[in-house]
Every structure is written in C-alpha cells, then in structure tokens.
Amino acid sequence: MNQLMLIAVDCVAIAILTFGIYFPRHHRRDLVVAFLGVNIGVLAVSMTLGSSTVGAGLGLGLFGVLSIIRLRSDEIAQHEVAYYFAALALGLIAGLSTELDASAASLMVLITAALIIGDHPRLFSRYRQQTMHLDVAHTDENALRSHLEAVLSARIVNLTIKHVDLVNDTTLIEVRYRIDRQRVEPDGVEKGRVEKGRVEKGRVEKGRVEKDRVEKDRVDQRIGLQSTPNDAIPVSPPVNAMFERTTAG
Image (cartoon, rainbow, N blue to C red; front, side, top):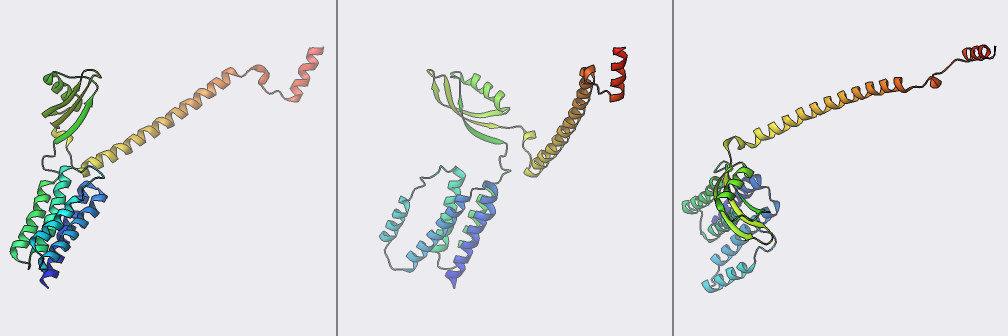
C-alpha cells in the first residue's frame, strides 16, 4: 500500500513538472516523453533494487549501463538539463523510499517548487543571451561593445569574444545583454497589441486599396474620353446617309 502511494505521488509530481511547468513554458513535445520515460524508468529500477536482495555493486552496475545512453539527437539547453535531473530525482526519491513520510513528500515538493520559481518567465525576464557571428573582425572590445549596443538596442552586461578571423574578416562572440523595460511585456498584452495592430493595418490597407481603385477608375474614364477618336464615335444610319447626300451634292 505504501508503494502504491509512492507511485501515485511520483506520477502526480512528474505530471505537474512536465504538463504544468515545462510544456506550457517551452512547448517542446519531444522532451515531454523523455521526462516521463526517465522518471518512470528510474522509479521502476529503484523500487526493484530496493525490494530485492541484490548487492550494491549490481545496482551501481545497472545505473552505469543506464548512463551509457546519451542524448545524441538534439542539443538541449541548461534549463532542460535541470528538468532531466528533477525527473530523475523524483523517481529516485519515490523508488528508494520505503513509505510515504513527510521527508520524501517535502523533498518532492521542494524540487517542483525550485523549478517553478527558477524557471519562471518573470525571473530576470529582461536578460537575454545570444551567440553572434559578425561579418567584421573586431579587435577593439570597447568598439565592439558600442556596436552591439547600437544593434541590439540594449545594454551589454557580458561580452565574450570566442574567435576573430582576420583573413575572412569575421568575429564569433557570445553576448549577454539587458533590454529596456518597455520592451518586456506580458504575453497577453503583447498578443493583444499585435492583434490590434494587425486589424488596424488591415483596415488601413483596405481603405487604401479602395481609394486607389476609385482613383484608377476616374483616371481611366478621363483617358478614355480624351483619347476616343472622332471615327470611333457611333453615327446612326439616317445621319450617315444624310451626310453622304450632302457630300455628293
């Protein structure tokens, strides 16, 4: 019964970590199944090792075999590594505990709360990081800093020059900067402004197209009246016959 409670608590914790914290913030679907698989797998192995009479050497050997599996597909960021460790830790705590006591539950809550706070979008939301490849070989760091502040419209807080190629005239840098407060807005406000601007732009474009169409029709009518030759003016048959008799007489 205690093991079932531990499994249930672990499933709730990994569900909150994956579906309540990670995916709504980062929207990477492939890591969802990775977090779930790692957590459940570690939970199962830990419970199996804890309930059997195998020695510690065999347990370490099994974890050594598991450590051979490396993440070779895509590069993951540091915050995603933290989610991996959290999923592993939750599985280990639930698998190695013999009963659901206050210590195990508190540790699970502490791990989840640490990621909720540490990966919150509002925490240091004005700071950004980029790796940039410039088409100019910069050897003066102060001039490079001024150039980046003008390009990024932000204050450079840390600048690292990784490579300067004087032959091909390129510079590889890693820059950390802080943007202005006016550029940092909640997602809802930014989305509403973008949608409003899109609607206003559509109205303006529609009005301009309609106005251009009316102006074009007017110009075409004027050009048509001015360029119509006299021979092209239709003449009724009686008037035409009268004109021919007058000419013949």
